[in-house]
Image (tube, rainbow, N blue to C red):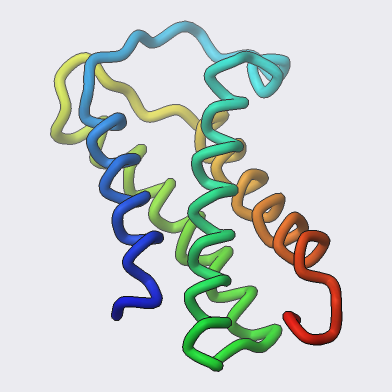
Length: 122
């Protein structure tokens, strides 16, 4: 559990920020390049990075765990969008946010691999 504490705390930060007030604008494909979507990329990239690192610290690191980390981070992002729509007034379900969350989760894996590419780490 302690190996995943940074990921859990980061997920709580995402939850708190997702529950706050927001605005909804009509979605367009180029919205993926907006500052809001960049924020999604960063937050979910960090989440998947921390999940992967948690598996590494537990000595339970594998390609399957990398994929699981991406699935967990992406699923959390989808759940946040659904919860915003269902429970948080003034927040909306946005497909482009989900896409940014998934891309960010994948970027977290890529950065983890790049950052810790030496054989002693990964």
